[in-house]
Length: 558
Image (tube, rainbow, N blue to C red):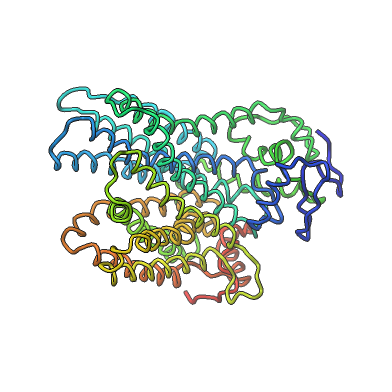
């Protein structure tokens, strides 16, 4: 691999130069030029997100997490149709047991994964959580009734708890790894949002794969038994890909990589070390874009390695001290953990109404394949929200009244969710008779959820907290979100039966307003003075914890 001079670039498809203008190679393959065009359309003008080993791992692990979390819904439908259970209360118990077990596991995983990320290292912790996903996916697909008192649902619930630990651990680790994978602080929030956006295809793939699998199989118990096992078993595939990438990178010639940065000393090729080297490796070998590196490229790699220094905290006491010394800790936690809690109450509770909306929009589904096809359409309506969020975050538009920071996007999302929930709640009786309008309005609530708080609650903790405790506080924030999800999934259905669907939508609107207010006052708005104040309070020169917050929206008095 060639060494770079100060003004030379690697012969890849295109170049990100200092002023953001594109220099396309005439010999570049069309696929590379297409990839370059897509990335630039999303606003990546200074870096190639796919050149980062950590970002790629975060994207695949997020896809894996979203698929594994939601696939149980269709599996339970298949099992109930062919297991012969007639008691509706028993079916409800089985559904609740399987659904709540993964949420409980995710809370444990988010706390555990976040702490392990700061104590043992981001990459070691990520490998641990991904292996849990692989093992639990295979275990879930292999579940069967052991006895009359320990049915297939009980075994599934146990495996789903283990799977939840693996899925939950991905949240803080993927966000932290991605945020620390780039030295470009202005695109850091955008890159974390892009990583989170891979959950959208993960959610979409569940009804899509279910529709493809069930529509090609006859409605016989043996075929359907194979179908639900295949749906669950596919959840291990992204994890296997992640492990394969780690092994591949681990086996690469580290000495050649070190030569890129004038470092000829031998280096240990453990998984923890690969993270700081993978950025250079994938950027040079398989990145579809030609990246121009100025003479300070070596210092950029050192910055990445300094960011990874947070991985090597060997003492729990030092982690506790880092948390306690975090500037404006209570305010930041209200802005991340509490808003995430409220959003997940809305998001997961609102998903309970999806079958009701689909039933009224399309009529009763006669087969599971029809249900999956209807759910695929609803997912397609919500999917663009992820990528609109990636597009606008960090967008520098002098014509805008406010900079499109994660804070401002979250405010927009909660505001629009409150408006649409309010409209549905006030005119619920009239809207439910207009099928296309009901589907559109309900789909728009998910669109703005994905555009706004679903993306930003994942993004903000990774850029608001200090590197030394970022993973742990990210995990605590995510665990608060899953506590809200557990409450929403548990309370919404009985509340809807008691108060009616219209009133539940109005409650959702009110909750959105409360979350909007919390975002306004508790998500830190930083400028240069705030950066300096945080530096002085911590005695630290690392600006990561306050980078890419809501610049220009004014200081909020503490």
